[in-house]
Length: 423
Image 1 (cartoon, rainbow, N blue to C red):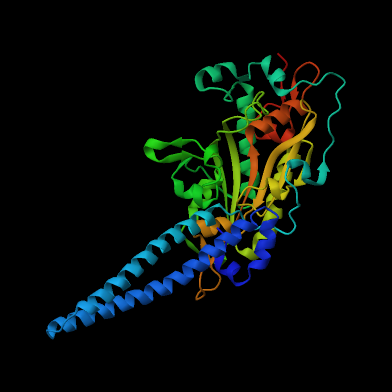
Image 2 (image 1 turned 180 degrees about the vertical axis):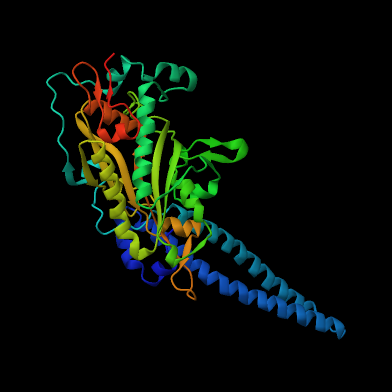
């Protein structure tokens, strides 16, 4: 949610910034509705005051035995006008609130322009891509001989784009989660196993509703929704709260299963476990003061890079263009791992600065000084580990000619085998 009061005082900068996201006209319409609302409220209050005066005058006339017909006629005219303007106010406020809920965050001036992921700015490449003396196989070919990934039976049980992970691959997943939790806990992130079912409020508060409703699984009978990321549940931890400044930053690491409908992705990246409806993830989430946000964004990125380096996955860091930002994000970095089976970099992690956009919708605030008025927090989120894609990168980059998989030392220390043997 944008700070309408601040924008109202000087709409130019916000209009220019939102023009980069194609939302300048929506902002102008929002300001128009807001202006009309501010015109209607004092007029309605004035009419209601006249109604009260008229009622008092009518009562006094009746007590004095005087004719009150003219006063009653005047009062009815005032009441009719007040009723009409009240109905207009209701419509204006509804339209204003509905439009305000759909406007995206104001992008960072440092976020690159562009409409697709091809416009992303590559900041750096890290690690050496493997060079194989044999024909590299993709993750599904590598897993098939061992029975590590069961797609057909999962499709029979649950539908397309679900999978059974089995055997040694389960041990690798558990080690990935343990590694990520150990790293982020060492950086002050409190581990949390959050609810994966939430009400509509947290989804609206984080900005996924109304725009991404078609991506969310709904349980209509109970008015609950399966989260696509634990960001939603973690953000709700401080909805409606006022934190003390000395408590900040507050950092959490959500360990959860995530669910995404992936509407509109039919036929795209559907082989194997690259794009599935259900997956496990460790998600970092930070509540910070506004002056801490830039440093926290860099901190999240540094942690993501450290985990990828420990996993020995070649990767690159990209600055995501405005056209690919989700509604809450002002700026986002992705870490894209090298996938030999696709011969390209693909997203493994992302981290976003959402400024005060989510905090306003959630009414999450802090008090800068003991006696000061509360201000809205800033929130940021970042992926520590998204399991399926990380498994793909490990299998494909660590493959040997005989079909065995060499795993990084950091994973072995977290409980995974050092080598996944050939079949």
